[in-house]
Image 1 (tube, rainbow, N blue to C red):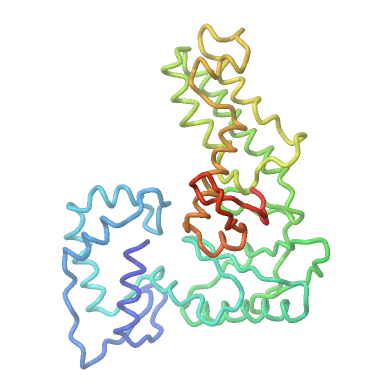
Image 2 (cartoon, one colour):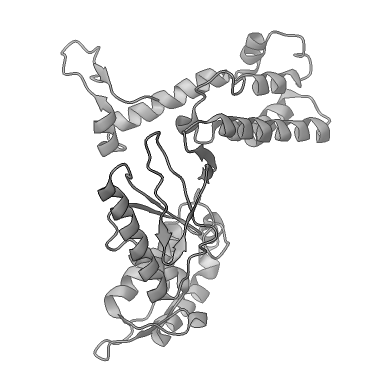
Amino acid sequence: MLKNHVLNISFTSVFISTVGPPALGTKIQVDANTDPLPVKEELVCELLQELDPYKLMGPDNIHPRVLRDLADVIVRPLSIIFEKLWRSGNIPEYWKMGDLDDGIKCTLMKFVYDNKLSGEADTSEGTATLQEDLGRLEEWANKNLMKFNKDKCKVLHLGKHNPRVQHRLGSTRLGSSSVERDLGVLVDSKLNMSEQCAAVAKKANRMLGCTNFFITSRDKEVIIPLYSMLVRPHLEHCIQFWSLLCKKDVDRERIPRRATKMIKGLGNVPYEERLRELGLFSFEKRRLRGDLITMFQYLKGGCKEDGDFLFTRSHMEKMRANGYKLPNLVGRF
């Protein structure tokens, strides 16, 4: 979490690292010329208030929203814990993740419970770089006494001309996988989203079926909020990435059509009229709206580097006062 990252920086700058017993985490030696500073409650409270409530739970299995809302209650015990760790020289295991990417040349994405290493493997140099980075990760794991679960480490080969070289993590050969789940999205070696579309439709249909079975009311004041909270998020999670490319994968309007039919008095009304009556947009229009919002954020500088790569802005004078004409569309949304 955020406080772990900030405190990890402080520990790294003050202490000299020496490896200690794995059960106690990293044992560190305090500089004799440096007096341990007290951890102020105001600092801990400020860090708790800055937690993102929309992030997932960290290694403590406590949701960031709970930590932020209860900051006034838990700030004192947390301050005592941090100060005791500071004075005793024991750092928890998860605080040691800060220097994991030191020396890594490929792209390394760090998450709470796993890490993903990616790079170009179409040349011998790219393959060698990937293997060197795997070696660095193994050295880091041995140094910090945090072993990787090599049985769960898999390689996903992307591209038609991928040589599919077998990589090693230490002395263990890593197995290959045809499909992997990344942040809730199923990705296969051909970047085909058929499995993702089928999984999304199955989850959404299951939630809609549970709503139909357990909820007896058919009023729109009941059905629409349940559909918006329980069903629609499955259909729209990371849709900018796995957007439906093939009509054969799933009928994108079938699930909202079924949901709106559940409402009393609208079962025999055409789908478009049901949407107008309920003040809803079709799935296709919501997706187009999301794509336009994402593109506008790129152009406004929300993701400056990626935006400059994906889009080229026009410099014409006749722009209807907005100045965001796109002469050449490089990317696709």
